[in-house]
Length: 423
Image (cartoon, rainbow, N blue to C red):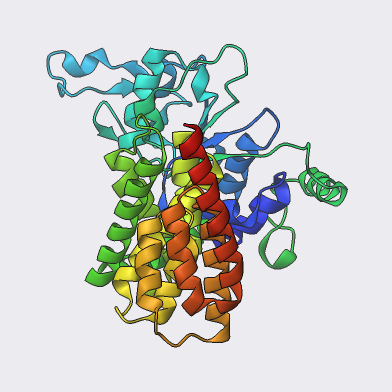
């Protein structure tokens, strides 16, 4: 069932990697809204079909809305005037039909960027609060799709609506898929989606059994997540990482790039907890790899950033977190900081190197420090004073590198003197 969702996603969709499959499965388990970008035919709607099958949802509990033409009457129904007549309840209610949202557990908002502004305002409440006119909705899975901005007849998605989605991801197309992968996808999709019953008998799994399994898995997920959040150190750990990441991103990107409070607290930190609870991993298993995956799918497409910026900010923020959480005298901590921070923040690199002077390093640590010194010298080549400082460190921490650094420093001095003379 749900534990097989990542594998089912990868088997029926083109080019979905392990990380994206795990993130999508986690969002399904945690009931977090997803926005999927991609060209037509990449499997955006098929993803919802896969989820509906594995959740055992009957068609009556699934709603597939076309955002370009489905309006308030389609989604909510016709307002019931009788509720306001004499003897009525006086509460806002609607006359429902087969497509109204009030009994739907899975909702797909197709082509959301084709929705006019008034419809986007309606979806804003539904996606953000799982309510409509203040009335709660039973929706568990909420997915929206859109084509690339180059497609015709598309409106710009309102930033407030975009901010309501926890994960914003892109589905790849057929262009770069290998032959074997294409064949496997074709064969899998040729099979009937409703085939495959219990124990390979071919009988469809009963709706009641499917729902019971889902609820059991979700209860296990809730217990795992609650147990993690009972740990005050864990909560502080995640909060500090999210705050460091956002501060680092704001420092590395243009001034107009801004992460909202919702993206910081509800999406970034929340999905990190969900991701760990999905895998049943203890709080101490939080690592930079997990943080990088979460940051990528929460922030990269939302902020229109290159993946290298997300990776860079994640590494830097994680190193700062490690620096706080590890013992002050940890040699390995300072080696790690030096390796990751030399290209971006010379001050942090310098502080870590100074703490390592006179410390005992093993062969692996010496090799890593030598590489860090070489790379940092390359990035700081225009600063003669910094090259001189790096050269002095090499004499102690990387003697074999010292002659090369001394030559580079001498060349930089001559170049600086020549530039000063000609100026």
